[in-house]
Length: 321
Image (tube, rainbow, N blue to C red):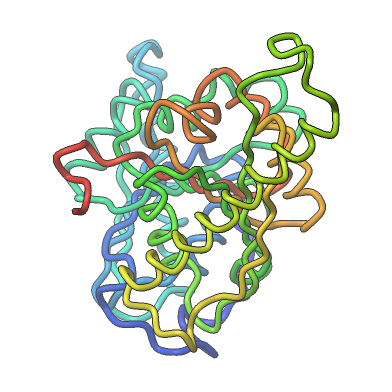
């Protein structure tokens, strides 16, 4: 199952990140199928702090017959130890890789392990296109994302290098600064161009105001789009300042503001940019954030052909002032 991890050690060829910027604890649930190679390959390319902890977790179904369960646990431990040894060779010296096998419900065990290891990020697989289209809405990854405790990097692509064509879908809620902050940690300097996607809609249609002409509607859409673009620019500047990213290390932004369905706007922008990573948040109860984890979540996550980083909202009491 394991592929060769032909990758430079994390940070090689890049500006040295501060320890606070790097990840100190990752939880990596793996199912020991072929998709696990992609997940582990991506972990090998993430910025990790000296002494960081990477926990490889496999959960054996708790409803197996007892004798079968014992054999499954033995097999899983053997495979996971090999995976941990293989991954450790591709990571910076000092990073500790720990294999953990649990029995029970995948989502519950992932949540418990994330808490006990103080994980900052969960990295797990999304599956191939056919499996994704058929089962993603009921998959472990989707249920972990909906639980909303930690950011989840859902890996679909076979990793070749660090992310080089990222996109971020933003609403205009305060939580968007958290989305951008995590994206900046995930992609160290020198940062590539980032496609910034924002979808907006007009609250009323011609059926409500039949006397409005198409020219009136177009003027309204243009005004809303310009206002949104200005607000996005301010949000980007504020996020860079909050993350203490100097101007020389800020990524070039390519802003994509469109009127229409959030799902369609995001899908088209990601496809046009050939993005290898889509970053989005779950903040608030309106706008893109709510829509993405609402009724169109499955559509977006099924259709985009790239990895997806989902950043949950902080509780209100934890929102930065």
